[in-house]
Amino acid sequence: MTSAITALRSLLFVPGNQPNMMEKAMALRPDAFIPDLEDSVPDDEKTNAREVTAAHIASLAAGGTKVIPRVNSMDTGIMEKDLAALVGPDIFGVSIGKIYTADDIQKISSILSDLERKAGLQDGHVRLVPWIETAMAVSHAYEVSAASPRIIAVAFGAEDYTNDMGIERTEGEQETVYARSAIGVAARAAGVLALDTPFFSFRDPDGLRSNAQDAKKFGFKGKFAIHPAQIDIINETFSPSQAEVEHAQRVIAAFEEAERIGRGSTSLDGKVVDVPVVKRAQALLELAEAMQNIAGPGN
Ligand code: COA
Ligand code: MG
Image (cartoon, rainbow, N blue to C red):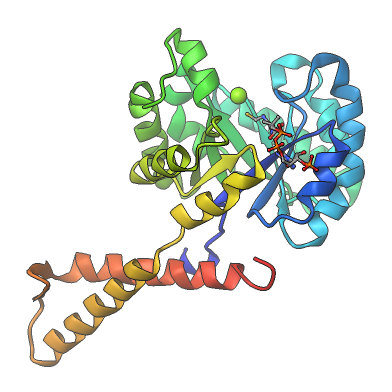
């Protein structure tokens, strides 16, 4: 698993009907672009958004950033048209909102297989990022997350979730604790990444940082951005910090020293260092190294 760490820390939404924003996005380096055909596009712009997005996919992908368009959900009746317009070699995957069950994933996967065959792509080329954003989907979080090898990550949508629950969405997001916990655990059990809902106050960097840190505590590995200014804060939050890396190196050095003198545990700064602590430190260093490789030139 460690050799194939996929970084999806920051995923920038770009409204699919806005060519100017698409152009602007090309100079940015989030881990993924999410050209959006769904909720950021008004109904009478859906066809235009499909065309504008299809025309920009190759250039968005050209810099090496993954492109994962979000299409309209199954219940809209236009998901298939969206997929037919977008499936091709330049997309890493597609993201689809309002998934309820594993059966939904099977239906989508078989549509994708047909489109892949027509496009001459290998079966399974197109990855899937389903949104878990209803009470039904949260209740099926593991089954949805594990429903197909196409799934690379699942996304939590707090706005639709709180709407579906008939509850208010507050700044502190206490009301999402159960859903975020359930999704963090389900995603981990299924071996996929959990990605957190966008933070709408895009001129509040401190609020974003604290919100992203909360998500990280539940096991989320990345977060959607709606504005370019959110990318750096999100990347920073979901990457190991220099202090964490240095601490992990000291933990490993202390343990190696203990092993040399025949001991299976030791202490560092007044805290025990034993096997699970060392494993955590090793995992952090592997993650840091993987992030380093991704954050190459231009990032
Ligand atoms: N992608 C690419 N470029 C973006 C962008 C995005 N998501 N959000 C803003 N920009 C651009 C703007 O076009 C502007 O470009 P300019 O300087 O050439 O005019 C620049 O970044 C600065 O933007 P700013 O003026 O601070 O914000 P704004 O008022 O233009 O836009 C939003 C604010 C919220 C309308 C806009 O960020 C947006 O549409 N975000 C996406 C929303 C979305 O996708 N929602 C669905 C998921 S929940
Ligand atoms: Mg949604």
